[in-house]
Length: 407
Image (cartoon, rainbow, N blue to C red; front, side, top):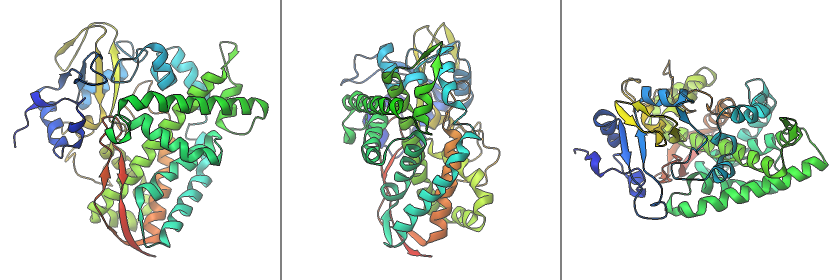
């Protein structure tokens, strides 16, 4: 079937339920790699349209040129004030020097060395969640194992108490994928961010009274240009780290099981050599899943991308999901190959100053989850079709029912 790209609109919720989504992106990459969309009638119709960049090299160009393509106007696909952008993305929606100053507060904690303190916790939580599932003979791997796993790890790392975790995950899902009608639509997103910010600000007050060895206390004690962050600003920081750390890793973990079930030859490779396969296998899963499917920039000056002139002030959206399937960069891009190397994917961003802060944490966490599942569960099979979150931002999987035997 021929794809009519003139009928494609990335703001249309129905597009994200199409089974030929990969073919649609391929057609756009080949025929119109810089692709214009207006917002459809609805709650976002007043927002200005945007250019979509879909080829790998063009995404890298936009991502790494932070002077021409800025983040300070927001990285959200719709329109926001600067205040709204900070409330929903904090330093993600800033440019130098503010972005660098704020990111530096936690960059050491999220470095390869800094995340080592969470290694034992990640292994323990993975083992505990799989152990509970093992006894039942069946589970929903997405909701019972993959999603609770990073919630526990991230909350420990940040210092969020146990009683917060369920609500934090609920709010994160709405904040990140709320454009899906099932999660309330775009109107629900600001409220989720506001509640997350308020929870973070309340925790900030507690940490000022009684500091602990956690990220919240670190942020609360830090100084920027000779002043400490307000409780509200710590709340914004907390919300950004929660949303970035929970949903993306949980999404990859659930999809990883789905991909292994759909590719039993790749599952066998992983089972035969878990530690040897994990480094390339995790990268391949992140590439193919592309948990965060896009980010926006704004042209600060007149520019050109993929032969398309872009005026200063126009929005440019980088579709990592498409770039990670670009046949110009990846051989057999739709194939799941756990030994693929090299694999310079865009799953953690397209490079430059805004590369995913939590990439090292995700790379540390996920091998434990896969290792525990493949070690303790045998003869794994799907017991019902997977259900996906029809969001334009998060490539989520809401349900993955499986059956198995205990090892």
